[in-house]
Length: 421
Image 1 (cartoon, one colour):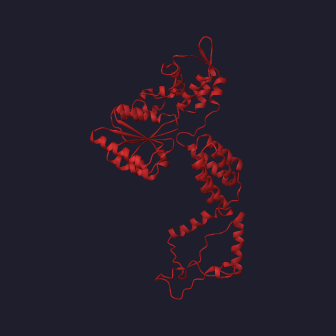
Image 2 (cartoon, one colour):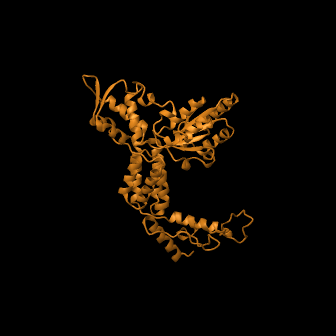
């Protein structure tokens, strides 16, 4: 019993894989690839516990390839190149090398780019695995060389069949007499949320916490199951629609100054296993885009949150994110930063290409006229010198009415009225 139940029951062939009939059923993508020996590099994506790693191992066994595993979180470019070199050496021996990269979405662009020549030259057959949508996280150059393969959460019927196999298979719990109360199976299936590994682990926990009767029967009632599992697991759907639905609702709630809605959506995302760094990055963008100069401290708050959670991790990161979320939600709002820069960039796109006035050009520049004189603002009252900074009048920044920006507006209006421009 020292070996986890999920390991003992790991499928050894596609026929043993729970669910995923859209991929492994007769005439479907993966089964056809194996039957015709026409494998290509691919990326398996879907929620945890849907069989990504298992399918990769099955493909390796079926093709008698050398299987090399890398975890993208722990790996670096040097290790990656060593593995690719190993694949190149195997190719000379006419042996196929499958390079399996778990959590491939964690690879940065340089790491992803390092894979391209090896795939092109056939030195490796790459199988990437990720719980994220690859169309958002994998570079277009790499994605164009991979077959996207989407795995879906297991249906309740698939989970039920898997649970029965756990209870009946000698490799599982089949050698024990187990009395499972009628409502327990439904509870376990519901709590697993389409995750096969979660179901198996939950069933194993129930067994370990079961009451052993005098007749040698392990009795598992609903109280035992609830005590073992403690809480229902939440998850986004496999296409990550909910991933983006919830971050969208979260950001819009912060922008809309609703701290209660914002903190709820934050809790939903964290409970579902969302990467806290992803949330912090989005808050950093919001701080500049939607709060901006109304409260310049907001960007410092978001940047600090991103830095802090990077080295404390969960579960404490939830507190940092909560503080940042509530601060940003309650802060005064302004979008003048994004409006101003976008307006200026639109002018440039439309051909408004202004040269700096002569007095702003470097004194060493040949383009500067001899009579141009730059007025140093600190030599003037109020540290302001009336002079032109654009060769033609353009208005990009219109201060808002809230928070710190209200002070900026008053100051700019006073300068224009009393000191000129």
